[in-house]
Length: 84
Image 1 (cartoon, rainbow, N blue to C red):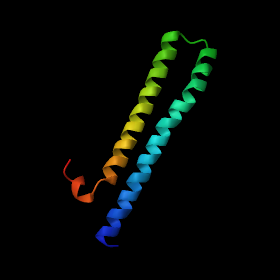
Image 2: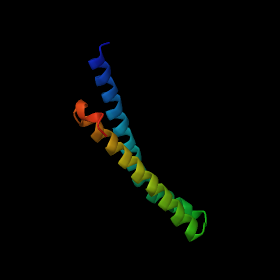
Image 3: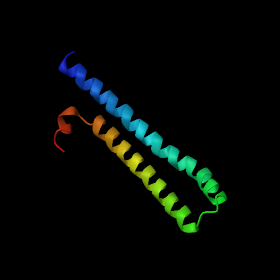
């Protein structure tokens, strides 16, 4: 493979990985209401439920943020990538 083909392959893999991170983060946001209702059925304290909910939403935000950052960095011009 030539250097240009290898770079294009790496860029494609990074873009796909970024999309996967964003989708995983979005999945947390869609699944949380159901999981919270399951936690309430387990008779846990309010603090435990809210703390767990906060932690999972934080993970979701971090996944979405990291995925968007990865996508953004791999759509820029290749000359600009090394200047971070």
